[in-house]
Structure formats: C-alpha cells, structure tokens
Length: 182
Image (cartoon, rainbow, N blue to C red; front, top):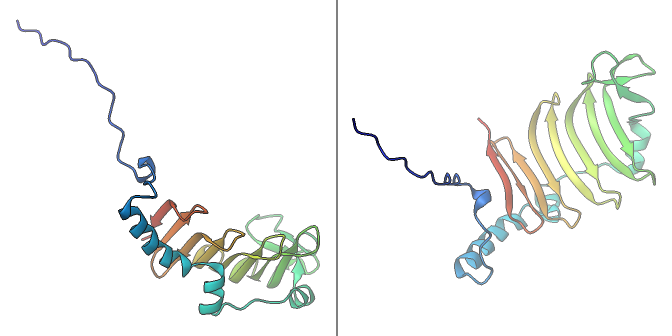
C-alpha cells in the first residue's frame, strides 16, 4: 500500500480585484497619461460643467417655499405604508412639490411627488447652498439620471439609465465602485 506524503498547504492566493491593486506611483508615465485622459472625462462631470452644458434648471428658494409643502410639518411618511409621502391636511398621498430646510432655513432639497412617490426631479443642496445632487426619478424606483458632487464640485457618484452603469469616485477621482445594470 502506497501512502502519499502530506503536502504543506500554502496560503490561498488573493482573488484579483481592482480594489487590491495599489494606486500607481504619480511619476509613472502610464499613470500620468491615464490620469490626464480620465481627468478630461471627470471634468465633463463636474458640477459647473453639468449645470452649464446639460442645461439643468433649478427652482428658487422663494418659488419652492411658496408653491411646495415642507416635509416634516405639512407632509410625512404614510402611516400605513412608509414608502409614500402623505399629506396630513388633505388625508391623502401627496402630489406636488415637496421640500425640506436646513436648520439655518437654507434649502436642503426639493422633489416632485406624484401620488406619494417621487416622480421627476429631486435636487439636494449642501448647507452652504452649493448643489449636492441632481436626479430624475420615475415612481421612486427607477432612476433615469443621478449626479452627486463633493462640495468642491468634483463628481462623487453618477448613474445614467441610457448607459446602464453607475460609478462612485473618491475626491481625487479614483474609482471606488463601478457597476452595470441590465
């Protein structure tokens, strides 16, 4: 009878992942070229570029507070189903413009609601008043487009339903997450 000798077990090799790859050295010519090419694309997703070239339009504070209802005071989550925005005064799921304010009364966000669900544009702001995110929803479930920026104006997250992909970047422009949707 033949007995095989026991082999020493080696540590399992880590699975290849982009998250395990160290960031390239800044002096590496490949890195500089790639970073420059990537920067051109990132610049086209900066807050100022998107506002100017995508022709995004925004409502003023006066318009929002005059024509909308404030979440937390006039509107709340539906007591029976927490997914819907409920109008306490009318005793129905809300349809119209909804907003919320920061403690200093600057606009935190506004969104269009239809039958209690987000339908259309939602715009979020930093306490400084700078644009934080811009998105277009359909029945709160399907997002047509989503932009989110760091306060300095660099892109943080982006989703485009036509391209069926989204990504999340750090403030230096390095990819943190990327996914494609079928």
